[in-house]
Length: 223
Image (tube, rainbow, N blue to C red):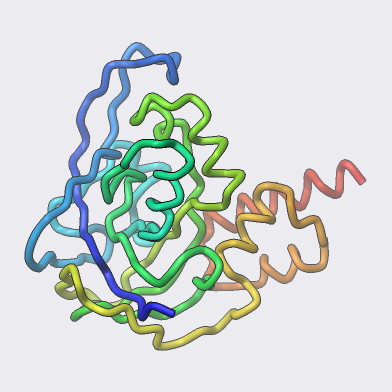
């Protein structure tokens, strides 16, 4: 198995887009378009230098300071979509080799370069994924495949650089991979006791806990 490492770092600032067939809006404003950067980048508690968010209600902040995406997913998307999407194509800051939703757990403490992170939640994909690439069903494909990405909170500030290893320093909740949390959020996992257990995981961000609690309430209402 490949040792985890960062293979690309991307940042971007908000800009305006003209609407296409994938959006009902005349125009939209987003920092989804992340571009690769060279050299070291300093990681603050709520962002990486040079990065920003247009929608601060749903993006950014301490619990969603850094978005990660698995490098291997790009090879899968190339086969399925027959186009080559660049690293950063899913709006991520860190493209990571050797990690994905099946082997990343909420609460994991990670070291990259001079910074320390903690996995805080799954990434809840939105319509901008489809709008950015003009592929109407891309959002549905991302949700169904579970190739969503995951967020990190920053425990210790510091510099990071492409090529650096990702070290897992602590694994506090091995049962709660990002894949399994996605299964809860998408209704693929309907075990009420398991979902209640997830709600006791303190490292799961408050926003993600709200999503999980809503899923549990809806499931119980339908029972």
